[in-house]
Image 1 (cartoon, rainbow, N blue to C red):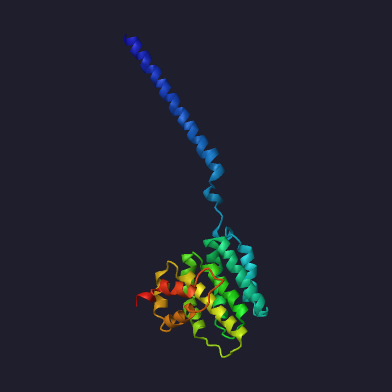
Image 2 (tube, one colour):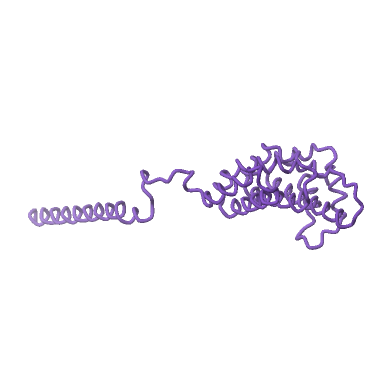
Amino acid sequence: MAKTRVYYVHFWTQICQYFVGLYQCLQRFWSVTVKGLFIKKEEEHIPPAESIFHKEKIVVLGRMLKNKSVAIEKRAQAAYRIGLLTFTGGPTAGKFAAEYMKEVAHLLQDHNMAPKIKIQLLQSVACWCYLNPVSQRRAKHLQFIPILTGIFDNRLESTIESETNHHLLVQFWTCYVLSVMTCNNLSCIQELKDCSTLKHHLQMLASENWSGWPENFAEVLYFLIGFHRN
């Protein structure tokens, strides 16, 4: 009986050792072979600057945007394309493009700029900030809010219908950009709330014909800021 017991103890010890060895073997296989196929090793980590989607394209367009010898139309097109690339390239592309958005902020302060060019610049900011809290904060830091609200204060003297329509379209796009910037961004909302003339401008723009747009963005911005509560 004692011999039988010793035999079984020996037998189960061997079984346990076998499963321990099998477990260790499978663990090594997972760590070395399987895991290595899907997870990059630490030493192979790509530097952040090299992993930015669209980096090369943004650099080329950024040089064109900052080159004052290039026609303003081409610089605005470059800004627009940078905006699209940051939209498709994700947060890292947005961070990288911030350097070039300083130039966009500077160009938008030219009130004599042609409406078509200004709209392209506005579109670039909208793409850059769309659902991107980091870019929204960066835009606020670059003083885009006073620059954009200043567009509402720029009065058009002309009574020519085509010119008034273009002027209005610029203001519509400004409403859209500010709506994008303030989406889930309390600091931007607070700064806009402190703009003394903005409530009146938005009320006037909300009464305009927004057909062709998915929303009346003057009204959207008005409610986002909370002017309806006052």
